Length: 304
Image 1 (spheres, rainbow, N blue to C red):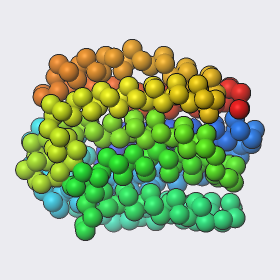
Image 2: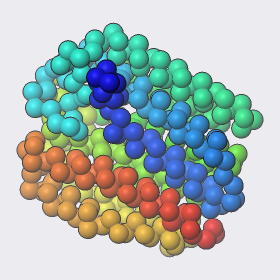
Image 3: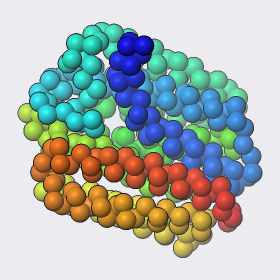
């Protein structure tokens, strides 16, 4: 049981919502458009996404350990600084890397099966792109997260790629509605990463990890966060206005007071670490809630 708890911490299981929510949304869009749903394929897609997500989390911990970024972080929070299992001596870096490869391999097997069932290579291309972006987020030679591209890589990987992949597994085609609905998903998961970079600003800067917060500086970055968060709601409104997505997706506006709370707390505590934790948590919640409400909107809305 103790080993299980350690591995749950290592893969950062509570954050699997980042891969599960877009899978649910993709399936919901397929149901809205074509009234088709395979529970078996949905569960396989969900499992494959979670396995690859866990593997990527482990690989990021491994490469951040090798670069020294996590060791230099003396003030980790539940949302930043990595899982800390290597730093705390709970698991070796070698075991982390082996587990990462194993999870990505198992997730890849599911992807290959789904690709076969779908009768084309769309899932193969989506899966390979997702693994590539996730693995090279911290891995050499690209180290996307160290060169201001990590946020974009995460946004694409956990936004359009998963939503479109889940949609395609069900519908065997690509829809503009599915692509459009993935845009706020991409922005939100990008913001989860972005706000988590605030507490890591000093160790990331000293480790030459030039993510967007390091490049912009926290004072400017806080306004980027606010603009992007408000943009999510605007995109949903535009989608409804142009009848790209159902009117019922406006249920996402229920979360707006939570967004306002996050913004006000950020403006007050953007340059602090532990006082900013509520914003980290709220951003994760906003991602889960908005994506879930989008899915509900598609399930009960009328297709255009």
